[in-house]
Image (cartoon, rainbow, N blue to C red; front, side):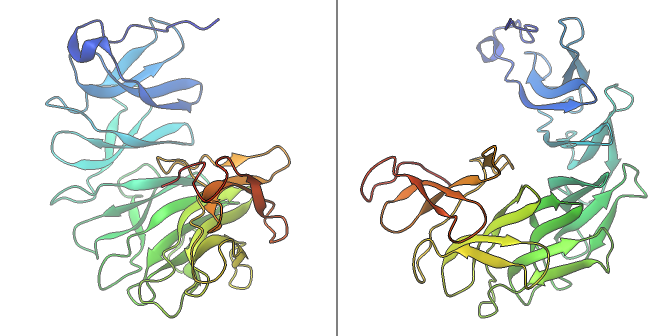
Length: 317
């Protein structure tokens, strides 16, 4: 049956709502954020019983912990949290003593770690140390000494890495080297092995503005603008030659704005049992509607025009 596990907030604060969110399974234990009406939003865990649903630790004793990016790496929960001073990388083994800051990456402020990805048992994320060119890609093995910048991609500023995604043990992400604009990069976890895959739009200093990277059955899909065909659906196998536009859905320079991720930018693409991908796109005729692809141009087509005519039947961001 379906039953309430526990009344976490028995008070009148927030009208009795505990606002559970970021529910994440780590080794059979459910971790989540919740408010009990006394301690603001803090880290909780549950074994599925009322007695076993408890607050793990009051990380921020003066306000909300503002945790995010819950990621399971080798049975340890990694996340971003604010302890009342700064927003840094934390980890938890489910105990109060074992819930600790991994490293104070930015000693002069917040490192604001984000876009977490577990690749081969190593946590990758973006962060700023306040010194080395703003936001870059970092990696962590869960120790302070093992939490280091992967590579200073933009030595003159901010590479602004986004959409860190694991595909078959390779880390893919978008980054700006300072000369190409934001383009597709990959990494094997070493500085030397962190390289740009392809300069998709070599004519623009802003790059291809690629975004929304998603692992679809071992192939990387994303949206990008090559300067000729507008923003369209692309795919990559990690090589220059194997990085290509799937289809010019909206002909010419106009964009179809394909969206394969959810509204909150989490990697939860809609994949059919046969492996085909559902996504939203605008072909310039039917508005934004539901499309389907098998990764080929001929296999990419409008699935259904939910709102007939030029009006959109679905909405993406």
